[in-house]
Amino acid sequence: MAQGQMKAFVMRKIGEVALTEKPVPPDPGPNDAVVRTTKGLICTSDTHTVAGAIGARDNLTLGHEAVGIVAKLGSAVHTVRAGDRVAVNAITPDY
Image (cartoon, rainbow, N blue to C red; front, top):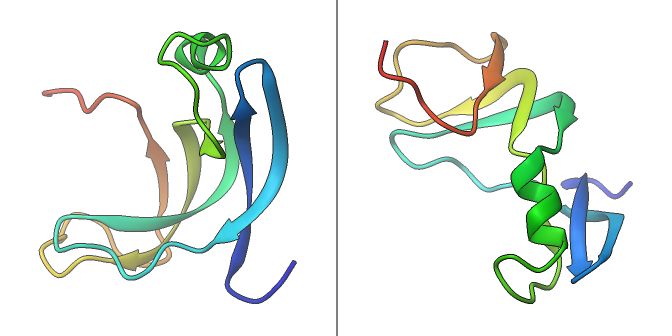
């Protein structure tokens, strides 16, 4: 894998998925974080997407439920630090 690249599970077209390389995301926005995924999952919405529920897509990254390590933080994020292990949820609950 090239420097500055990451593996991604993508929808190539309706009915077709693959592993590919994509650029590591740039620096996050003020309220965002870049998380180095250690384990990731697809969910039911991903299977519907691959089946064509939202129409044709090219190289759409799938798997929005994951765990990993915080790599970079936006300037307004103060609840976690770089190096923290985190869970990434598709929907942010209101605790």
